[in-house]
Amino acid sequence: MALVDYSDSDSDGSNHPDSSLPLAKKRRVSGSDSKLPPLPPAFRDLYSSTVRTSTQDDPSLHGGRKRVTPHVAGNWPAHVYLEWNPEEGDYKLLCLALQDVQHALENGLENVHSLLQNDLGVQLPLHVSLSRPLSLKTEQKDKFLDRLKAVTAETAVREFDLSPANLIWHPNEDGTRWFLVLKLERTEGRELPRLLQACNRLAKDFGQPMLYEQDQTTSSKALEAEQTTKDAEAFHVSIAWSLHPPTSKTVEKGIGLQQAVSADLRKRIGKIRIDFSEVKVRIGQDVSSIALPKRRITGLTGTWTQSI
Image (cartoon, rainbow, N blue to C red; front, side, top):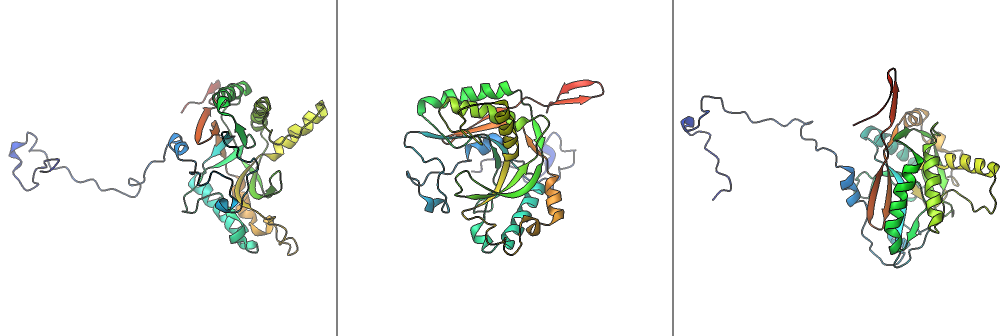
């Protein structure tokens, strides 16, 4: 027995009240109609973590990478960041730049690993870090999230956008890995430094390491100004990584990023606009989003808040 009883298209339609109307034509599905809508960000967050395949840190499972902050049983790894999902055109530009860099380097395809996509070729989200890898105790999880919401609101940072300022190689703080990164421009509103300072204060309150900051026993306006400048210049988006300094074998040949990536491609990448509308925090496998207030737009008739 069929689940749904359809009438025969050749049968007499006199039994139908609207038999005088012409039969509906089947809708043809064009290429644009068949394209599925993008997944909502909340859905991505549910499946943004990989399943742990070992209860111990095993570099062999992660391409030789070692944790900067060792995992402690019973503690929850945490990270505060801004997420960026490049649009199709921007994503293609980044892929082209990475391909040029890999081809210019000796053994580049084997040593330089993409962060733009996974092993199956699926595009991955990129991010700007607002904290170092953190390690929270179970009783700290909810309190940390609540405090993060509060300090984010206190910054009064609204939705903002910026562009890449440069493409460089950047080592991590321990010098154990090198990253191909997009250095980000400094904005007039100083949104990134304001968010970082709030997250660093929060990390310090929870006894966690701070990002881009050195321990100072004394504080002065000069030191604070120097640190603010350093922070503003440190923000970046990583698009690839390597266990070895990728420039070491190419300096002798005079091959750098300017030679590997054409001026035209670097110029096009510099015109990318990166939009940030929320702060994200991962605690264990859970991702929470903290929406930033809508940006204000100034026009001839005054200032108003943008709505979607």
